[in-house]
Length: 242
Image (cartoon, rainbow, N blue to C red; front, side):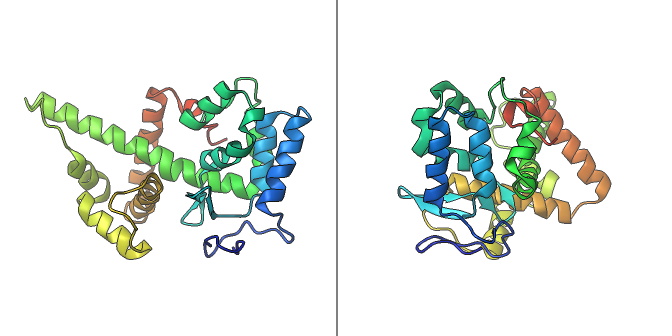
């Protein structure tokens, strides 16, 4: 996908319409609809459906909406849009959406897929399973390891990261992180950013999928979804994979 001057690109992107609107035009249209009293979440999702920039720098911050060109981080795009139109949306609903992915109770969740559109919804599912569920799977495995150590009298073992990575991916975290950087390129800065962490998680998901049998993949997916349910349910974090 091509982007406007000064913005990054992602090869292989599939969300390019014949006559793409500029980001400024889409945001302006969103603001007009909200000022006219339209439902804010429906407007937001429909704006996302037309959004074409996979990556942009806005107000000095880099926003990567499509991890690996295929996993759509819809909450991140919501945050970017709400930076402009947030004064037209209830502040408590903004906070709930951005912190937990929850949508207002008044919103008909069956409309989520329709408003977001086929391509963005496919990208949303990639993100849901590749990042949200993958993180829950890692947490579930971590809790299992702590429980096992506690049952063996090792109640104060504080770091089981490499054990978790070995169980799920067959290698230590540092080794996998090195492979990730070799494949995707070096990262700037001394510390891992939130965006980098999401990219790494999605990379781990694809790595696991490519190196496990179907039965193990199904079992791990069920395990991750079960952990989300224990944390309040998949629908409590995001609208969920309808």
